[in-house]
Length: 276
Image (cartoon, rainbow, N blue to C red):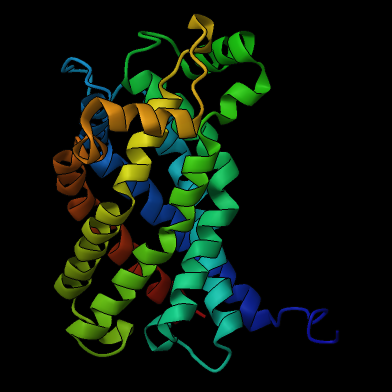
């Protein structure tokens, strides 16, 4: 009981704060880098016609990416430190601890990221062309109530918890490429990040296809297919291959984005801790 009530030391609190700042910086930069290709991915998944509006709906994801990754990486850093108490770097933490910490981060952000993803998908798919964020939210609430904002939550929740793979692949690649995280060259960090981005997306991509199809539904048109029903519909439409439509855009996006985002987090965190 005493352990459960233990308060964090000033050092632990500082470490969590630094991870949150680093996550905020990395998330904003990563989202901006990958948004155009993300738009192409969404439109390919939905079999929509190509569009030159590659930054349609960018404001909410880019503006909130910093906050989302602030929470995600803050929880990740706190979780692995709590689970591996005598370790100073996640590269030295056991693999199951890294996975669990990454999953914890995804678990925490999933309620908020579901709403952000819902609005983004509708704008990227041009279901609400030329309409702002608040207009889309108002239309969703009017057409399906508040719960419509969280459409696709179950698929998004599973996807976010799979951030455990994302961090596991990143840390594992850094281990393979050599040494402790702080001693790794920038190009090796970028390579590890790119590998983690591509590998984790290959794992979760079928979930993303289902989530996108569910979240692209317009309640004002009476579209209310459940996640399970949508998965079955997609399978009948194109078999297993239907769940990998648009994977090329995702892989093309995932490598550069993670190759920028994860090293940015790593290096920002390292420099912040040098300032203590």
